[in-house]
Amino acid sequence: MPLTLSDFDYELPPELIAQAPLPQRSASRLLVLEGDRLSDGRFADLPQWLRAGDLLVMNDSRVLHARMLGRKESGGQVEVLVERLLDECEVLAQVRASKSPQPGSRMRLEDAVDVEVLERAGEFYRLRFPGDAAELIECHGRLPLPPYIERQPDAPDETRYQTVYAREKGSAAAPTAGLHFDQELLASLRSLGVESAWLTLHVGAGTFQPVRVNDLSQHRMHTERYVLPQATVDAIAATRSRGGRVVAVGTTSLRVLESAALAGEMKAGAGETALFVTPGFEFNVVNMLITNFHLPKSTLLMLVSAFGGLAELRAAYRHAIAGGYRFFSYGDAMLLHRKPSP
Image (cartoon, rainbow, N blue to C red; front, side, top):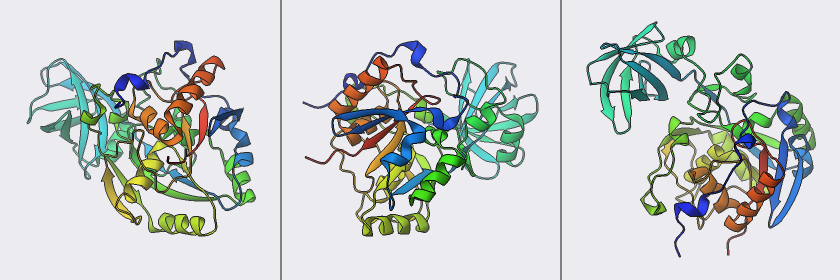
């Protein structure tokens, strides 16, 4: 019987939604799923689950100050959430307003930046900034904390809602699995002989969009832009040749790697992915996945269920809820071993 949206629902007590990060990144809890076996630990214990020759693949995207408030020429209030940078001056963005802005109209954002509405593009709008869009967004915008964090961003969020290795500006949301790493833990893994490689996927605001159809075959993923360097492709080949494991840090890293290998041999380069992973998907690259706990009925919950096993993930989430794990972006982490194909 085909899986439907209700197969990925669960009840989460609201008090388990983490509203702020822990004082120390690697102090988060870590739930390890290997087959049907669950182990409770701390993220700082990650080295005991990895071994020399393994390869961590991390997303080095950096979160933009992508949320901007303002007014239309008519005076109506607007909220803009930048989805992606298109070129130096143009962006794709979500625009929330009582009445949709019209092409050719202007909006004044943060009482500082006048942007022109160029056109509607599906659920987004193409906007033109009066100069370097990335610089203006960084200077005047606000950090876009997820909608389930019920507070305004403060000074600590400026660093804690970024990974310690974030470099490439362009995301509307953090690749949150990487938030648990600090420099001390990365150094510990290097000393163990665990290698690291990087890619870039700019996380779009669409990552928080719910699945609205019960028939999953009808769902269409938002596209996200990525860059997969040749050095990372080479590192993966070297890892396989020595019998090491490819460990994706986050669903974003996994989606890039599996997208790049869909046609067979993995190809480096820039591209876009709309890969929608549900149970039954055949993974070709990733052996282990580090990830946070995901929203009910979300595409990310479907992805991790495909990777670790649907029944196994259901049991793990029940265990995590009963054990008081912290959920979502600022919450705790999981380490999943890939379930073998039938």
